[in-house]
Picture 1 (tube, rainbow, N blue to C red):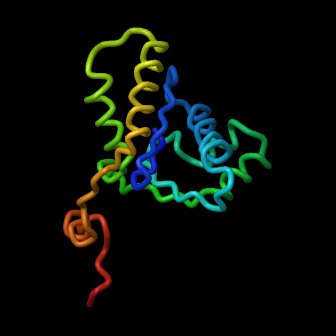
Picture 2 (tube, rainbow, N blue to C red; picture 1 turned 90 degrees about the horizontal axis):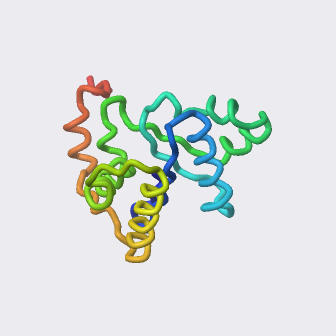
Length: 149
């Protein structure tokens, strides 16, 4: 799942598994197809073991991996805070609206997800984010050390 919540855009890649190569190819698509003119992409992502620069180096030659990494400004969510990742919110919406039943064939999943994605993008559906900085500081207090006295 790739999403730009304030723009109301998302793109979903349906793969057989979630491997390092799958993630690397997704990043290459994000950089080269969806944001080719952007100097830096601020990427907020969860803490899966496949989501790292190592995956890019395993999937592509070193120069290509470095080129892709240089275009990214990566911000991981806190270890137990994937609920802070707006892509995770969008995935939950997709599961509720589109994948709320058993589907046995990847081709059917791709078709259903593609239709859902196109509809939401066309309507410019945004995520209404209500989690404030003050709420984050209170909720995540135990994860971050205090610098006061």
